[in-house]
Image (cartoon, rainbow, N blue to C red; front, top):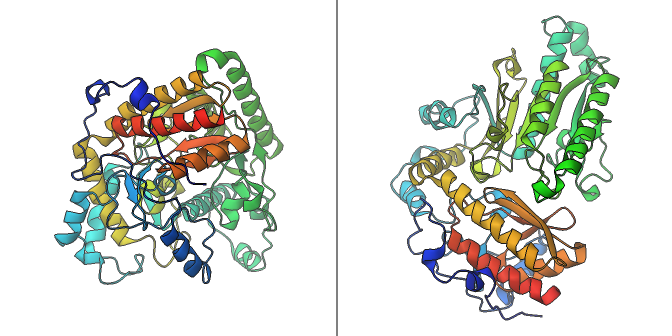
Length: 489
């Protein structure tokens, strides 16, 4: 059933004028739509026609809408049926500066990307000097503190896959007393019969998502459908604390939950002496339900990994790029000893990881593939970073994010039987519905009323907007969300 959109809630209940909204440094996108405009049911008839054509060749069942790529602008997705949709999902956290940012388009039209538009190279064989300029320029500028080495790939799963391979290489070299593989090791590897390496393990957390390639999938613990029927490594998992919010009300129970998680991780290390190559953790669990832990928890994990000689991997595929209010979410932890490896993708447009010098393999071709990323996407990222710096978009994410989380907290207070556990860092935010059925009903209402949203875990509603998301967009989205709360209360 199509729901005729109406927009009350915080947008009209608590905001008397635009001047009441928080001020941010980010400028408005010229020409961006002023508001949602719903003309047809969503998905509309043109989308369903395309789905039928598309589905005859490729799986199209997960498609929300088909997007008019040229007409979409800023925070508004325009679909092929002409609906103007406020996007708080951002293609699962992949859109850093909104749709069709004029400066990014100007860079394209001005020839800035001409060097990488004519062919796609094997970057490990014959890169161009422009690639080197970006790697040593913008990519070095955004590098996490203490991690001078960069490996580029195409996707987040590849980033994780190669990060754990780097950890295995380091552990094997240490076990051999600093030497490389022997002839016997090389021969054993070709028979898939390596007595030492086959015993190596990586610790991950319950509820985690690290990708869908087989190594990364062995670390993923969010949904069974991701894993069922695929062979997996017998690697250990420990509970993630999943702090409850508001933090002040749950401080004691949160501390106890974090202590139990740390005890479980310590027990795994002790049960597998010198066989744990790495422990991998998301700063905020995304697919697992937007689960948070304290900065103290992550600092303790880092110390534990160091004490046991394991690489500490911060998987920032979803949290990198500024939406949490720092470019890298782990920056907020206040670590004296940085992570050994930090993975990235999504808002950074390509995949890869930064690492310490000792995690960079001594031999060439150990961490390698044909493309080693995508020069066009890296060229776009260089422009994106420039725009983010100029327009102070990380500061914008902090200010807008505070307003977003406060607004979610207000909704949860007004509709305690519908929403709870509002939380977030920057605009990387979420709130829980009372149960999975309510989550589904709210998401359906948002979609039909012109808000592109998404769920995480079994009950959460997640926000993953672009870094150009402003308080006025928050007010509009919260208004639609309040309409949904009224309908399901």
